Image 1: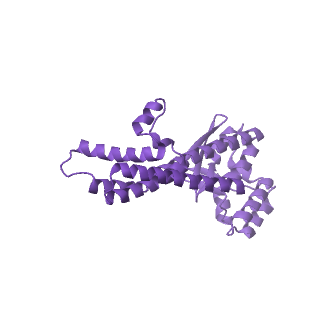
Image 2 (image 1 turned 120 degrees about the vertical axis):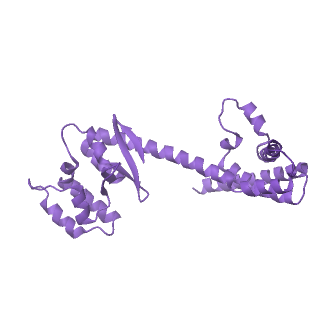
Image 3 (image 1 turned 180 degrees about the vertical axis):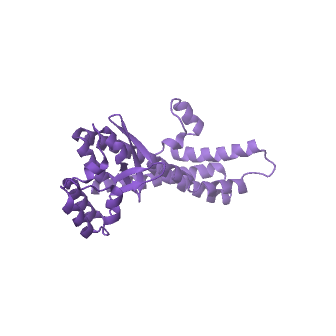
Length: 267
C-alpha cells in the first residue's frame, strides 16, 4: 500500500493481482459538493467506458448482464452500487473493499477516468503524482536487485575463508579482521581501493563502496567472490589471488560494458 497527495487530498494506492488500484473513496473528497461514487457510476458515459475496458481486459466479464444495466442508465430511478455492479457483471476494474483499508477502489485506468469527472486539473495532478510514485518504486527495486546481487556468492566466499584461512584459536575480533581483509581484497581487485580508502575519499556519502557500485560492477564482484573462494580452497597466497582477480575483473567489465553498448545501439 502507498499514499500519494494530490492537491491536498491523500489517495491510497494498493496492489491487486500486481496491478495498481486507487481508492475512489479518497479521491472523491477532492470534488466540491456532496457527491458519491454511485453518482459517477450511474452516468451513461461512465458505463460505456467501463464496458469497453472490461471487454478488453476481462475475458470473464458478463457483457449480457452489463447490457441490461446500461439500458437503465439515464432513468431518474436508476442507481447501482459498485458492489452490485461487480457482482452482476464480474467486473475487475472496480472493487469494493471492507476492513481497515475499506472503500471503493478502481484500476488505475478507471481511476484516471474517475479523476477527470472530479476535474481535468485533478486528473493531471494525480497522473503526475502516480508517475512520481512509480519512479520511486523503480529506484527502490534497483536498490533491492543490487543488494541481492551482492549477496549471491557471499556465503560461498565466507565459507571458504572460514574453512581455509581462519585458525581455530582466533578471537571473534581476529576472525572479523580476516573477513574484512578478504572483502577488501575484492574491493581492491574490483574498485582499486579498500573500503577505508573509499570512505576517506567520500566523507559526505553514506553507506559503503559497494552501495555505489553499478549493476555491472556488482555482477562482476559476485563472480569474483566465487572465484576467490576457489583460489582460497586451492591454497593460493593472497598476493597471487589479488593479481588474478584484478585481471579477471578488468576482462569481465570489458565484456559487460561491450554487451551493454551493443544493446544500446540495437535499440
